[in-house]
Image: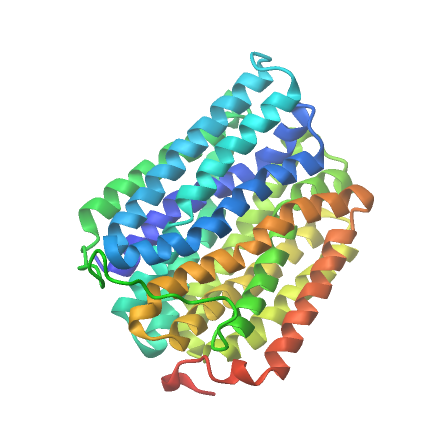
Length: 400
């Protein structure tokens, strides 16, 4: 099997679990008596760990190898999410009280997830950068990025199949699925020799590197917007459409499934057909994402809300692999691991600020998270158009 598809399956085993979590987590937060802001902070602390440890894992992959780091990340995710689900169930059963203690334990278990799983994206990106060139690299990064979209399609259906056993059942399912990914990766992914020997100085790349910071800033704008939507959309559906907890999980799951199909179409079809440069694809992906937020502002029924998420899937489906691909072409071969870790860490800042900021703004007015996201995207688009450095970090074989 093509190694790119093996990596895809490994990431898919996690992202399908993430999409199972998205519709059920907000109702669970409310069932536990926690506020929307507390729910957002659970994910924020996880993302802080992601930002701190992603660069380290990227550098470690240069010495340990991409495959060992990738496998460790999948195992860590399974353990962390399993613990998260256990705390959630004990909180609902009032075995653990008060709610503040439940919240602190939920934060702790998600911090485990953020610490260990932060090694998977940089290891995957660096593996692809090691083994591909030119337009094929952008396409390959699109394939591994599509793991999130495919997970979003299938995850809600799997979650709906087990939610009858309780709202926490989907969380336990999402902890088991990565173990299948571990098996696939362990058996089928070729183990490339580490690029560097133990004790050899590792490449050091900083976020302020003039080759990288404009694209990193644009990537942070994209992920900030994605996290704003991801961590408020279930609340938005529930409040806009006046739904119960189970109805919210079903409606959001269906809409996210449609969004996942759109992202999958962008990453598996559009990237292959268009074969544009990374920056040209960003010029298409960012405006589509902006349009999706404008649609959310004016949507008052399920059909329009679902359409907004479909457009969002198209936009982010193009934008995410494009900015990641642009980074790989801006650095030298021996810097790929460090650059991948930095990319994952810096753009993870969007998931540090997004959940707490989004839920905090939502508590003031349900439209504020999307208005803020629009402002962030406009800034990213302005930088893309104006800054001269964004004209050089693209594949030479697909200049446009």
